Amino acid sequence: MNEQPPHTLYEALFNRLLSRCQPHRSTHGFRFKGPLYSLDASLIDLSLQVFPWAKLNQTKASVKLHVGLNHSGMLPEFVTLTEGSVADVVEARAFDFPRGSIVVCDKGYVDYGWYHALTTRGVHFVTRLKTRAGYRVVLNQVVIPGQGVTSDQVIELNGTNQKGIAPQRLRHVSYHDAETKKDYVFLTNRFDLAAKTIADIYKARWQIELFFKAIKQNLKIHAFIGNSRNAVMTQVWIALCTWLLLWFLKAISKTKWSLQGLMRVLQMQVFIK
Image 1 (cartoon, rainbow, N blue to C red):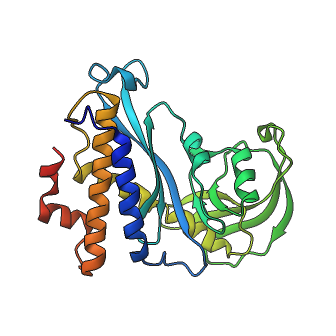
Image 2 (cartoon, helix red, strand yellow):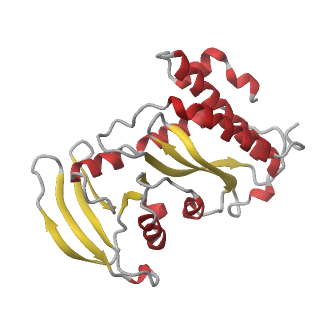
Image 3 (tube, one colour):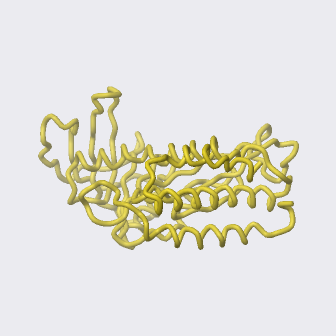
């Protein structure tokens, strides 16, 4: 039944539902003003024999769900669906994040031209620095001991990966996580926040991993009704609409149930099998 109606119909429904949810958002929990978004993409595996149009490589097929998750309420405010072969950063470039927001992403989104474009539009980012990135240190800033921050520098990118972009001055924050015993290096164009806050912002990116896990486990988008591209896209958009409906129900009822709990109580999986 998912073969005929265009999946764009359900995409439009998702956006209408999203607009109804947005006034009920909570705060993101940080002291700074402006929205905070976690940006990531997740593969939805398909059978190559059944879905040859979604070929990823010689043995696999997939579609990819690209999401910009607003930490104010954990709402997926920027969403696109593509074949699995589409690079994450390609879709990220098309997301029109609002001026003054912070976008958190991992190394999969490294694109110095895109970083420059975000800065020009007044959008901030927090990401990881690639190991072999070329840069020179412009300024070493004082760090507060005991917070895990090992260095806070202003740097200027100068490697060949600039691809003709004028050298950008960015902030380079090194951080040691006492829990995991791992060292991290963050790159950002936000200079006014404490270095520890930059590390905490990146740590909060884990929320989007939880979002993808909840979507896949609770909304059963691993078995599809129909084999065409339109059928698969339709089913994923319907699942996302279901997520928003449950989110809205939780928001207006002031219930302490999690979204996953509501899914089980209402047995929503019946409607999407």
